[in-house]
Image (cartoon, rainbow, N blue to C red):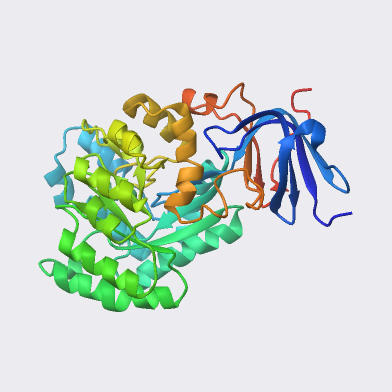
Length: 408
Ligand code: DI6
Ligand code: FE
């Protein structure tokens, strides 16, 4: 008897190891939370294992939402409604709206309130087969609140079955205390906030918003230098609203990912391809902002840049808590194939987090994080809108929902 052995059988596999990596009528053996065997059902080594009958479901890697701002307080639906009733951006800003309203709410919330407000959003993702999320700070913009956000993100991973990767996004916006002194704020980010948060073990990666309304290329570079000194990987909100050559910058630092990319240049594509930097595509923000410039998907594809797809869940530009809808939008709006969309939430999302050795495909040695789906083929995941065919989630070998015989 092998301790903790489970065989998941009577299911079709999309391993995502090579394209879909389709294996009909397959099985997976898991021991101690890791995949030890993948293959045809008829050959599955069953000795000493608990058997989970997949009932003819499809099994994919657990989905990975590799770009979220899901930990924040309050929301901005009032602002959304005001705009649709004719208020201008300036009206809203004068009334204290926009990103700073989320900063105020997040500063005012306790750590527990942040967790309580974020959990329903996280639960929505988990119901759709998500097993790993990335969570960014960036609504604190001071040391204490950034720390509170990152601790809340980490603690969510202890409350519900999800793995959390934390990203420090101190350079998200200029806090009111520093108006007119952006370089001083970047000093604080680089010399105080990042080193202290890293010393507390709260930072897996470092991000910045490189944009005319965010931080300059030179300021971003200083943040990246500070990350490099601490041995932390970098990623970047790049070319969302304009081409700031952020993709080239993050590629030069061997960055994990460049995210958004609607205004990415050919030169940026080439730099990302050479550096192996993942393109994280965020159709929720494009949709919600009614943007009209799509990211250069065909060029990214031709250059062999791995593409990920994520929700960008945030209260201002992408109040989206459905990874399946993000996949659908990536296909519908930007012409990703359903296979690319699923790779974008599995194998390539893992890479955008630097976790490709551990998660993202169903392969021997990886963690047994899976999602089980009542679908006819993997393309169904990108096809339907607002329909959730998830029938179970497996976290490190532990099945979270019954899947046996719901068809009976
Ligand atoms: N880009 C965005 O679209 C969001 N952050 C970012 O860096 C906006 C966040 C917000 O409005 O709350
Ligand atoms: Fe974002």
